[in-house]
Amino acid sequence: MSVMWALFRNLARRKPLGAVGAAMVLALALLALLADFVAPFHFNETSVFQALRPPSAAHWFGTDELGRDVLSRVIYGARVSMVVGLVATALSILLGGILGVVSGFFGGWVDLVVQRLVDAWMSFPGLVMIIVMLALLGPGLWNVILALGVSQAFTQSRILRSATVVVRELSYVEASRAIGAGHVRILGCHILPNIVATIIVAASNFFGFVILVEAAASFLGYGVPPPQPSWGGMLSATGRVYMVRAPWLSIFPGVALSLAVFGSNMLGDALRDLLDPRLRGAGVIGRDAGTRMPRMSVGS
Image 1: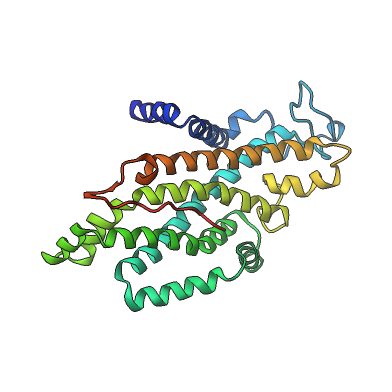
Image 2 (image 1 turned 180 degrees about the vertical axis):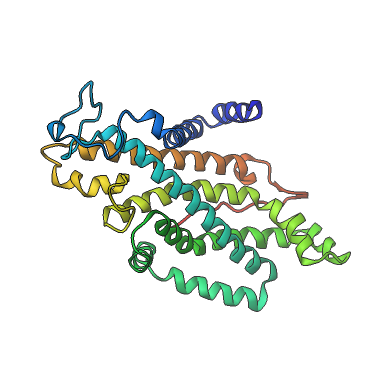
């Protein structure tokens, strides 16, 4: 705990916006984890006598057309966003890491075949591919996670392949080959430890993107099905129908979504600035001075 606090203080001192983003993401994660204890009502608790009530002391964010507490639904919606964001990001990094590291490390025909497959996949719009996969799999939390993780793994593979190619050409990797080190040892001892920073930056930047795409899929009806609340679903259903009569149905889920994406983006930018040697002025990767890590960004 003391180590984490020290890291947070260092982040707050060097990158204040990054610390703000970390605090936002942590707060949303705690809300998602403690939703059963923090939310004043169950997310599907209805009361026809309380339908479409504006924000008040009893219902801070108002109620929807079924009398359900909007604050409680926003809190439970954070659980959906956090689970999808974390698991889909981990899945995409895992699959993309395997493709990217193998492609960048071995090169030659392996790199050629893998990258042509990646090019073919990325030639289609990302959101269209996600919707196609969800249409085939059907709506549901784990189907959303699978579709997001698999579809975006190819983008992650490009980022991690570039980092692997940089590290592969360093002198100590050549020295390891010269003394007879096998591929597994070189990958485990030299390649992977030196691309950890790139993995962290890619994951932190991708996290907000996943939350946003999940909200878009739910908005279009391909995400988490009702009555489980999700921010995109809340914006799509009652939010659109009662936008003029009850604007709080759209405002509060939209603000929660914006804060989640803003916080993760600020955290990702701060981690990139701190971990990228070129940006922090170190200019060293691993044990080879003068080799700089290229600045990476996550695209859709």
